Image (cartoon, rainbow, N blue to C red):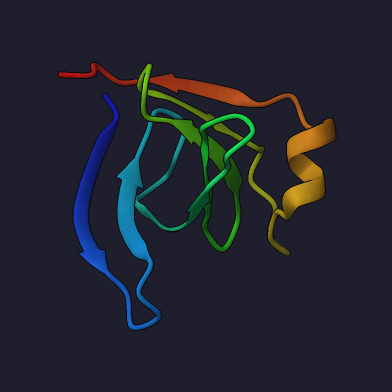
Length: 88
């Protein structure tokens, strides 16, 4: 089961949260980037993954985990893992 916890505003004014998802060994802390005007998604990044969150449909797409970190280029060529949340 996917769980988002510990949602708060960071020192830089961005939103951060912890995500525990299927396949993750433990919670990972993610930072949110501003919403993209073109595709209405929020880019999220942890120390090992990067992803896109679509709040309209409750879908998160994440890159695979990398020990050295994942970056924006990985959104283009990784096979993204999808996580679906209920939108209420």
